[in-house]
Image (cartoon, rainbow, N blue to C red; front, side):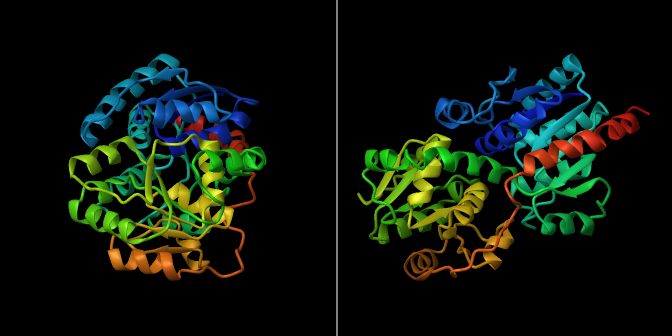
Length: 362
């Protein structure tokens, strides 16, 4: 089969790195990058550090409002679908690239495969929640990372062609860990960090960066935590912080975004991670690093139930208290599969794909 895959943001590059390697052994893949993350720091450096083919198509959409981005992606993806005539479209996660791909393919009656289906925050104010709900309900084959995701879909009446496969990000993390075990000291030394004696921080979601009061509260907590913090800053977040006039104390070190392998090394060496990233919540769990989530809810509820992730929102006191007092249990159950999710995904594409294609064409 010919499959057109949509990526557009850093987490999707990680997921595609796992799946494309297996997919291309059996099928023809056309990789389309929407350009949602468009500069080198947020896009190119990730392609450099991952076993991921260069995109066959790059829409170079760039920044804009959600409507502007999605509209530009819809137009570009539709053109690629009409030109390539794939048998199926493969999408990941919950970005604007995901929902644009789903909408474009659905209107052309091209079957959709959704990897990381079924996640729910139950917060409709989040653009990502709207994207994932729409994508799930348009998809023909839904590949889920957890039983919770399957249950979420069932509650919405989506039960056909729904499968538990695990999380493809674990596949890539296992690959990365084998490569950074010797390189980790180099990046930590370069950044002046001692293993287990610093905090890793990331902050990029609009609910935090676009809300002045939430952003001020989070940054105030960072200033109050007298412990070395390394903060790879999303370009958009850096701009917002600067424009608002926030000044961070010297122990909060703002650096440029890191490549994937460097990020894994820095995450693995941290005493704890503070983040609003879904992907980093999972990686923290797999790496055995306590995670403090700077959101009011999380889709990755299993990490919270296991006691390794504390959701604190943007409350200054809660953030400070979690950094000082949060200690996870000694037990860390296996979550989100065994690191072989990509093969399961492609096996199901092989198994279900032809029948889905035939049904869609009829």
